[in-house]
Image 1 (cartoon, rainbow, N blue to C red):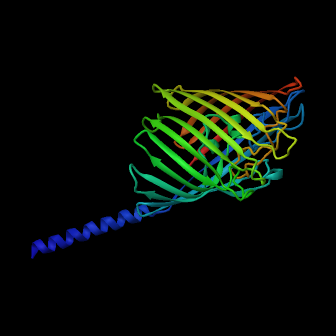
Image 2 (image 1 turned 90 degrees about the vertical axis):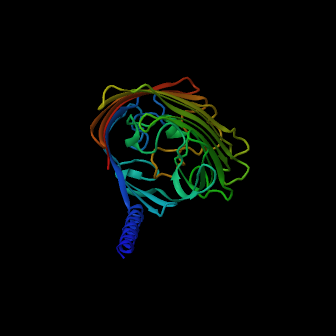
Image 3 (image 1 turned 30 degrees about the vertical axis):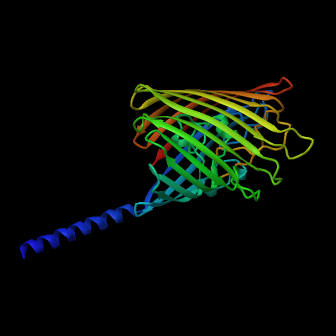
Length: 379
């Protein structure tokens, strides 16, 4: 009798533990960030309006020639909600609140609210493990992340600003080949996250990663394409190779190269073609101080083509803004030097100085120097 009672009590305790585990898995997880930035920039006498300037990725417009731009910007308040349903299903929604971004989705620096991500994932029991996602999600293409608080600088690199899709809506399948290699395949409405066409766009990522969390090295090759205009025969093509390699305990080497082509929508126009590259060096001087040196290059090979479908650093925006804006055969070089101070866990201060140099086909060269600082918090 005592043995039977002991077995019953043991089984009951095991059941309670199992219920607690399931409940823990199904609890709502809340996280997010708050980013506040202040900065200054000035367009020189011959400056070219477009993607240049430390504040021009959603914080402020480029301003007129020889005009100073200064201000405090509540860049973003983001609330991320996630919940697991059992062991195989997970859903997530990232809600962004902005107050001072000046872009197509936030004209006149008015307040705006938008859904950066909203998706559900299902584990797929195939091979080494797969995952199926459906909804709106961050593309993950390129060296820079989507949110500013994950950068080691204040500004995003020009490739991220001008050539890459940031959010897409559709279906995605991820498969882990082994401990280091994985790939993604996806089918989306369009690379600009709109319903502009009735034929979906598509893409893939081939990923390699190795190392412990916090000191992981990774390489990603991404390709995408699709009919990005309402005319089905006019397609966009994109290829991006990016990498971040951890060397030793403190040094990181980042590299990115991108080519994009947006086919002309008019018979008399040429295709719009862009090439860009980024070199980024990061060094951790201590547990709380780090430094970043970054160089970016963008070449607008033929801006006379049809309007390009290009990205914006604001994840709320539609990703359809003007082309890089450098003029026919225009080039842009941008140089950034930044330092970061880790105030405490989840809170840091970043200071960056940046110089953008643009040159048009007519031989006009413009300079846009600027400085910015930001308090970036994660919770």
